[in-house]
Image (cartoon, rainbow, N blue to C red):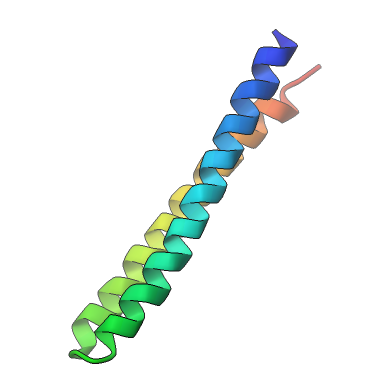
Length: 71
């Protein structure tokens, strides 16, 4: 059971890091494209990037809860 807990914890933490990276990439890439357009896509790009970062943090905390639940 302990090995399975470490595996699930590590998988979820790794997935959370991927979502954090995706959020940063989306925010930076879309912000660069949106700066040539009007202001509305710029705000949406920042919100979408921030949303992915929040999802990444939540998934990482979920994975961390597996690891911290070990006896």
